[in-house]
Image (cartoon, rainbow, N blue to C red):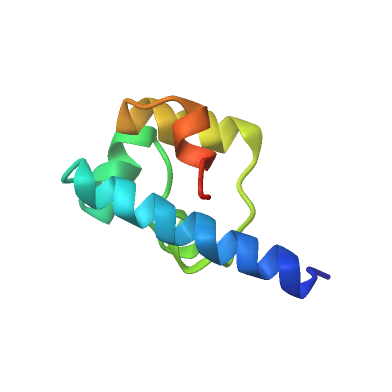
Length: 75
């Protein structure tokens, strides 16, 4: 079970991912294709419903052409 703090963190990550995706002018499907991830998983990440693995973070960062640090730097 995720704590309220965990849920808040996942929501912040999802909002940050969505911001980065839009800045890079990717649609959800476009990012999913570029990262070789199912588009429904991107939706769940952006909603804060999923906790991405390290490998998933690596795929997303590569697709967005940013570092993993930039991807997880949600301040």
